Every structure is written in structure tokens, then in C-alpha cells.
Image (tube, rainbow, N blue to C red; front, side):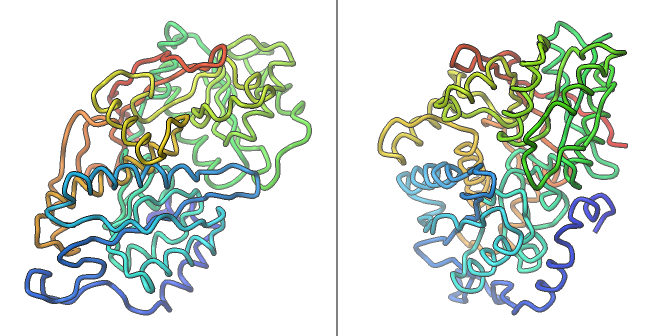
Length: 420
């Protein structure tokens, strides 16, 4: 495993090696093809079995449960349209890993060894400890490529590409370029970037410091210092340092690379300290967050990075997404980015499976993936195997203002920069 991936996965490396090496061999299929009557894991003449793994419950209260709804919505439409090359999708739903590495791996073992799924889609957890296991078992796996396990392994795919830069790869510029539009340009503008004190946070700081600098920003503060295991009760130490980072003055933008509970605390604190600049994060695009007054006030004015087309878009693809979600939920429900994660994970799996043809095996699926490409999706133009090495490079910013999200930087694909 490359050094960058080892660094980010240090917390779970021992667990992965110990369990993956001792796992029973269920790589999934015989040397024959399904059309000749031999067995292919999870595939029959009538169906393709798929499962998911999602952090539905977490210690902080943050939940990605609607990822499951998004996946179901896309699979339901596929089945209503006749399935994939005549086969219906038998979606088992998502296992809850509780954002725990051991449970993530246990869920993967269950789906592969007991349920015999052909694919895992969606996979949505920041503790993707099952990556090595699923890749070794030759299980096509799809999710949001924001952790290293989505970058490089042969059988694992990010629906927006690999969003964790690899050595020799690139860094997507959608966030800094979008923020430059919001600020009327990057030249002379200062940003302060804050992340949690763990491997992922440290790597995020390294990545975004390069990206914002390349876009023309001054990066006077970039630190991964917030405890990752518990929410701070007092944010004053962080806010004081941030608000003096621009030569003793406040920066033009505060960039948080943290999850919602942390952002609420940080943003509330900087606002109380009198900060009037731009605040931005990649997490808080969720109308459900607006139900509580304190949360709504904390996030008001924040510009949120999206790696997909905003819900506020009126494109045909977005209209189809909204219709599919409504049908799956049985009613109108507030949309959120977790639904999009499940939906587009399922969509990429379905698109590659369709190209693989009626004689579906892991080998035919992987062969189809090697030359797969399409355009005009909710995440922009997709291409493999590029997406296993780098992001598709597209994004938008939306701002929460007066209880509603508005597009502040339109969805666009940007030229990436080399990762150093």
C-alpha cells in the first residue's frame, strides 16, 4: 500500500491485516460464466444481489442513514425500468457500522460470506476498514471516495472519483476556485483551515493548503488540532488563534474540514467573537439541520462545498433524482447529501453493470469498468479507471441564508493541480 494510504489508514491497519489474511476464501465465482450455468456470487438469471454499509448511528449523533434511502430510490427505478440486462436488483438494504472499524469489517464479512452479495453499494463510512477485505474478495464496492480505500484498489470505486489525492495524482480545485468566485477573486485573500487531530485531518490540511495556495489564496493558518474523539466544550482557544492569523487580523475566510457537530460549535464561536468574513465547509448541506434554531443560526451564511449538482438546480437529472427519492420515501422529504451519496453510488454500479452485458461475472464487470465513461451526470463527466486515481474535479458551493440554500458558485468542473 502506498505511503499516503498507509498514513491515513494507520488506525485500522493492524485490524485489516489480521482479519483479511485469516478470512475464508469467498472470492465469489468459479472459472465459468453465469450463462453456462456455473455459480457467480450474488447473480442468478433473474437478479443481482447488492448490499450496503452505512454509518446510521455514531457516537457524536451524526447520521448518514438517508444514504440507504438514496440507494433504494435508484435501485427501485432500475427495477421499474426492467432491471439490468433483464435482471432485477435484489437490494438487501444497508448494514449499520456505527462508524466503528470493527463493525464495518464485520458488516462486510456478513454481506460477502453469509449473504453472498455481488456488490456493496453504497459504502458510506469514514471508518472504511473493510476496504482491503472487499478488494481481496473481489467485491465491486461503491461509495463516496473521501477516504483512501477508494483510491487505487481494483474493485473499489468512488461515485465522484478518488477524492483523496495520491502520490503522482492530482488535487481537485472545486473548493478553492468556487470560494474565489464568492470572494470576487483569491489574490490577496487570506484563509484559515481547521481540521480534527487525526490522520485524516492531517492529510486534509496538507491537501487543502496546497489547493488554496495554488488558487492564489494566502494560507496563514492550516492546522489539524481539534480533538477527534470528543467535541470541545470551549472553542475560544481555536477562535482566538484563527481570528488573529492574518497578520493579527481575521482571515477573509474560515475553512472547516470537520463534521457537522464540530462545525456548529466552531461557527457559533467565531460569530460570537464578531467574525464577519466568509465561512465554508464540505459537510452541512442538509435541510434537516435547519429544524433547530441554534443549528440554523450557527450555519446561517455558511458556504457549503458540494461534489454534485445542487438540489436547487433545475436540470432534468436533478428532477429525476427528486422524483425517485419521493417515490422511494412514499412522500416528499427534505433532501440531503447522504441521499445523493447512496443514489450516485447505486447509479455508477448500475451503469457499469449495464455495460458488462447479460453474461455478468466479476471479470466481465471489471472489464467493463476499465473502459467506462459517460457525461452529464449529477457528478459531471465520469471515467474509469481515472476515477480510481483522481476526482472527476467537479463541484459547486451553496450558501445557507435565511433558512434556505442558494447556489453561490455554480456546479462546474475545474482543472486539477498536481499533488505534491
